[in-house]
Length: 190
Image (cartoon, rainbow, N blue to C red):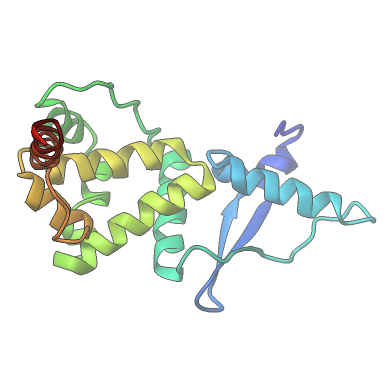
């Protein structure tokens, strides 16, 4: 979207979550980081025949209120305080720690203290990953997936499966290959 005037930069838009009536306001300028929000706003604005800005909130049925609050917090900080730096991919083992030391606000944003402890925090992190993908917010998607990588780094296949909530019956890639080799040997011996 091309913002033409200072007025466009100050335009406030409303975002509504799926699970409650809570509405969040954010400047159109701060929302520029989300292609989905900008496109939804433009479509909503185009539907308005009189050219006036429509005050009806943009609804996001796939995003909970708690998660949308965090997304808005991220977009505002990114716009008003400090742009999120690109994370290098592929990244060296220590780059997350170094990157997060250089950007303490972003480090705190994905911390257990901010997202919550245990399953609650992990659930919020997963919701943020999903919301960032759905809303097409690349910096938030990079930060949250990087945090997931950091949480899983060095874990066994079983521990990663548990972290991701995959069924415990899932076999590791190595055991799947061993099973396939065994079946192949059995067929050739018959």
